[in-house]
Amino acid sequence: DWDATEMLEEAKDLVRGIEKSKVLCAFSGGVDSLVAAQLSHEVIGDNLYCFFVDHGLLRPQDYNHIEILKEKTNLNIEVIDVKDEFMANLKGKSDPEDKRKAIGKTFIDVFEKKVKEYQDSHDINFEYLLQGTLYPDVIESISPHEEDGKSVTIKSHHNVGGLPERMNLKLLEPLRYLFKDEVRKMGEELGLEHGWVHRHPFPGPGIGIRVLGELTETRIAQVQQSDQILFEELHANNLYQSTWQALTVLLPVKTVGVKGDGRAYEEVICLRMVNSSDGMTATWTDMPHAFLSRVSSRITNEVKGITRVVYDITSKPPGTIEWE
Ligand code: XMP
Image (cartoon, rainbow, N blue to C red; front, side):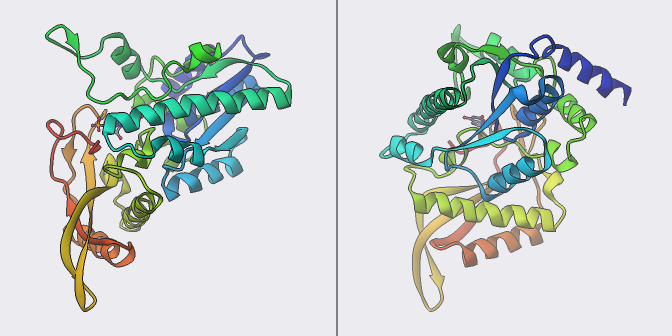
């Protein structure tokens, strides 16, 4: 594909000329960071170091994905386990913005600390931070949404903002002139597997914003299990690409039900699947009823503490895609 080859060369040009420098990447394994890392690796090789932060708010599929990428790509991927630090800093917090801020701040703090330790023990010095920023993110950060002259923030999205200044790193953003579909095309041009470059989006704060209210290990595990079931069924029924994003949310509500021969008073899992092109607006996906039924009966049977499953039929606006 001539277009993709040309685009890829132009993106690589943004990385050329720094082949001797050490480059650090906050690597999530998502489409953007993966494509950014792979194309940079073709230019600077093993001077690229990908750090994957395991904050414990990930789904089983994310852990599998990172293992597969470690095995099947030539990227140098370092997994940093900081689950305990995140749990400690989130304790007692139930307000969505408090949780996002705690997650964002903890991310930057632990990332900086772990990178410093790594530099000292390997006797290297990072000069650049590689980020998979896309054109829409660049535009959004230049002109935030304005209302009555004041800028309005609906959700504080920018997960690693401030990191380059704090760590004294120069920014490397080879995808900054590209849209998502172009990045996917480039990913395929780079030889990355179809499923890797067509993954659904997943938010930086992860399950942290899908357990409504306070996070506990049990509640995180409930969402991990319900999500695992949802995705097993999406793949088994060949429906993964029929929706732009799919997720499960644990509601902080108890409802009455019957389980076995007794009364149950347990919690609710909400399924959310949406169609969108960029996440700014969305409509709910009309999934086959047989599929929804199967997911519902599996979740209520297999996930402890869940007696009820509901399907979110709200578009954005007014409902955002995530519940927090
Ligand atoms: P909302 O909920 O704002 O989500 O309609 C739009 C898209 O953005 C993702 N999202 C986030 N991504 N950090 C992220 O990196 C965040 O704090 C965050 N909040 C929402 C969401 O998953 C959807 O794809």
